[in-house]
Image 1 (cartoon, rainbow, N blue to C red):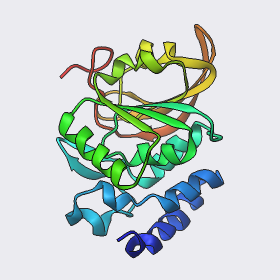
Image 2 (image 1 turned 90 degrees about the vertical axis):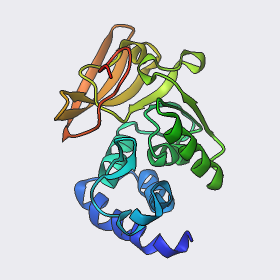
Image 3 (image 1 turned 45 degrees about the vertical axis):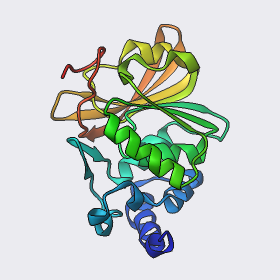
Image 4 (image 1 turned 120 degrees about the horizontal axis):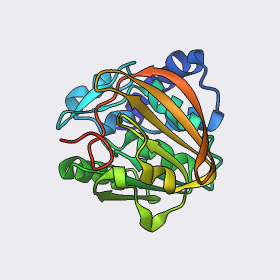
Length: 216
């Protein structure tokens, strides 16, 4: 089952990621390895490695491969990090992170999506992922501080609890904007109240719902 789509993954990396500037070899190898189709309904498997997002139910989507790679590369992971992900979704981004970091904590607010992702993690033997069903805008204080935080839904501003739970010197990547269009922002925490920011360009994500972001 895994080998059937192996060549499509290689083509995805060679035609979608490398030409657009993704160069971290560990990120490229993770994208070559993780079977994106298994995070989708079987009817969508033929489209799994195409250059666009796909629906996963409950008005949620799986991001296009390039965006997954771009957000992952921005964190500059070396292998020993403890990462917090806000918005598990299909679990594909989570599995990529799990290939590159020591531990991934991920939060999903929709129970049926979280359960589906957990099942896929178990099938792929991703043993370094801990998932919970909660309001991701509050972060996960129990396991803080984190060596990187990734938010896979759009917010009008970065939720304060996430900055607070980020280790000094580490990075947070999040789409910031309105309901229709956002900029992919990378923040590096320089002190308790200071950070530097980089804009990775325009993007479109579903809304981040929670206490410190959009309301239902």
